Length: 398
Image (cartoon, rainbow, N blue to C red):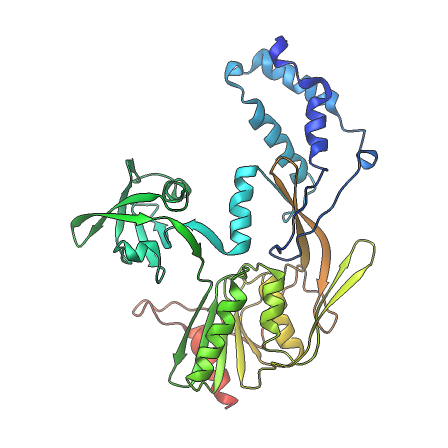
């Protein structure tokens, strides 16, 4: 085996052991649990790790792998780390490289450096289209409009490129410019946007039929509570008599955000209880000072998970509203996101949560009070029979 390719003789095990040294992180919550600081001493590390087997695997790679001279040492170590965590067999425990962790933490916070536009790609035509332009964003300032076809970012042709790569080209350092080439009504335009910190719009709202408020929550991020509170206040000012909260396909998010939002809905009492492997539990309470007293329906489906299930389950347990739609995903466990000394992160399952009545919904989900499957209308793309049913349920309580 080549000297420069010796399999570290324990150094790789040292790299894996490094994963147990956790750096200080604070003020962030994960999709379904709190972000905490944990330190694991070397004495607690598992010494039986089979580094000898890895040595043999590496020797085989060096002797027989077709592209042995192109082996990326860092990629090998990252692959071992990811596979090591994957070996737990827990779909919610994940290892993130330093680069991947940046996206993870931005997703948790609900803020990112960019231009404030949402993109979609047609996999058949490879066309990238602007699907949403945030209000007061760099994209709006640059003149970008929903429906624009994006074909070039700076000098990069985006046609056929992976959408994540396109997004990476658009993102950049705060205050720098990015040139966006788009087609609008058969006309080619060059737009220049100045990147800055963008707050993701996780909440949308409107009044239905002049009296039923509608709030759509796409995910629970750090920014979501303030957006939800503002939406609720705006609808109250417009004189809403009842409310529909839409959590369909909401994958979950920040625990603090969902607890604060439920503080605007529930009476005084326990919102959720978590229990770790040692049986120690923690209860989260609502003081009831902002209890919502109007008719309420919460829309869910099979992709409503985690924090969405805490929200809808608590509303159901307290009888504060009707749950409408289809049975939810069934994710009743909590993860902590732990920062490591090299900038990488671990998201790992640490406890199970229980709703106000003490029930667990893990792997079973929440069964709606009013079950209705979504039925697309070929003649009207904007038709939504589930939303119509939720509004009907609210009207019956007026």
